[in-house]
Length: 363
Image 1 (cartoon, rainbow, N blue to C red):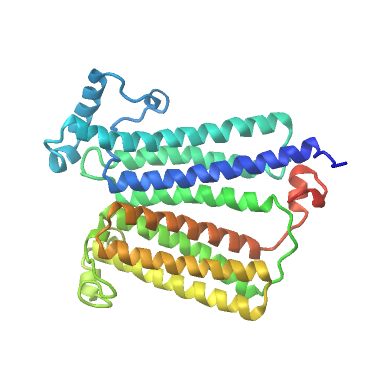
Image 2: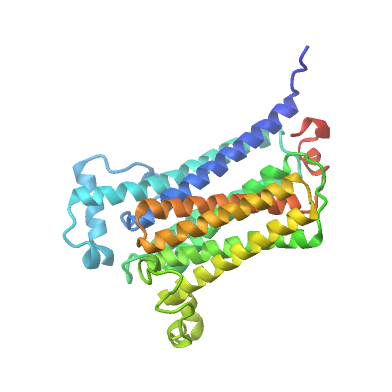
């Protein structure tokens, strides 16, 4: 007779499914956010109403009020003057969908979390991690409005620095969930060299740097200029006078479209080279099937992402290529998280401490 799973085991599986659902929703939200940016829809809602803003305009009068609010900001006056109500509705629905997804994720995280706490499913070791992730999610809502507010008075678009902060925080939440999810499964300890472990963590860190740089490129619309490859502005390496003409010099890292795109390219080359070296090292050192497969898969997807990035640049960021580039970036990040976690110091008893299960029941 098949042994029925215990109540505790069922609770552990429910927690894993819950975290996987939240991670998937965050990935979808990042893509919707990318579409919102590419369609220049992010400033179409000029108020932050966390509760009442859940409902869209339902009458013509409400639509007219929302449109009048948009007409009052610089983006409409300088970029979209003459836009009609039907065109406004198109950009409104992108931004509204993005915000609605944020609310859905908040509810989908908090309610099951409180249920698991009430049922006693979560042990002490897991609770602080999940509270920390919840805190990051609450902060993300505030950061989102902080970003939108930057484009409502003095600018025709949101600050690229705030946009990059908003994106990286979302992906940090995603990474925290994926890492925690992986640690809930018991696996044999990983035997790998210190060099492999360092390069695995280096790939994860450099991936975050590249994601931040990519968000700066998107925020400045820098992908729609210097649309040649491998040269940029007529050279493989532009002159210092062009890269660093703003004062103080560090402003070029955030405000100079040439410097921002150049940095994004250089980080892509560095990430590709490190991924290849990591994969070769994993194969040579015979670190184990999972480590080797993870390293090779990561290097392959980074190569595919580089090709997508070049095509996106050459074709001046059409929306489908832009979204494909962003979706692949999420895949790169996911594989980098899995590889870094796989190579991290293993604690086989960790999952047992979370649910109080025998190790053979966790998987």
